[in-house]
Length: 184
Image (cartoon, rainbow, N blue to C red; front, side, top):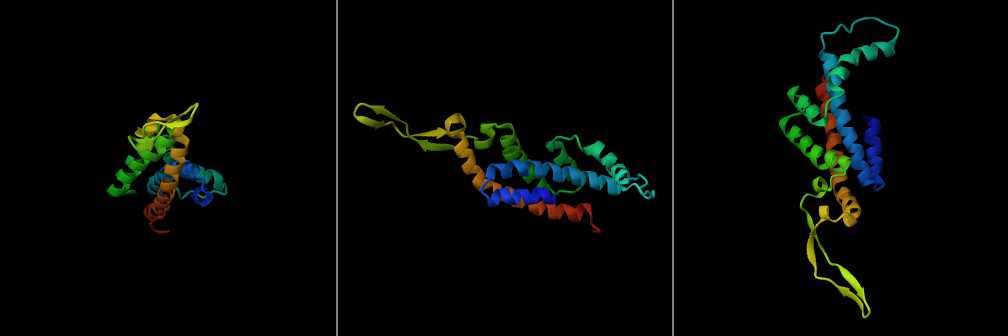
């Protein structure tokens, strides 16, 4: 997970917050799947005591069942499996489902209703007439209904959300490491 953590840090440091959220989405899913795969491999009844000079095939064999079992799962199912196996607790499960809905699904699927919900902002139109610019009546406009402001609004939202999302996942990495590899 180190490369994803490093790149996520760089994205935030350089103000690439939408990229950081997208990377954190990948980070979240990979973190949980790897945790499930290694947890399965460590606790498997499969004989891992075989001696081999072929370390690559030994490692592939070691994780093969876990990959087959967990590698294809949706994020929703991955979160549920991690919870069932006590790799994440109730509070973490709820937080990860929140991230799944508000970051992963919203940003990855480009669904602005999921990104902004019913959040409204004050806007004021204007028109050009012979005598100059005439301002319209100020109104509260729902961001999701105005594609013309989506990109700037999403960039502003990502600036607020990306550091929190990244830091939560960074802490989760540390907690999961202790749960998956308790003797390490």
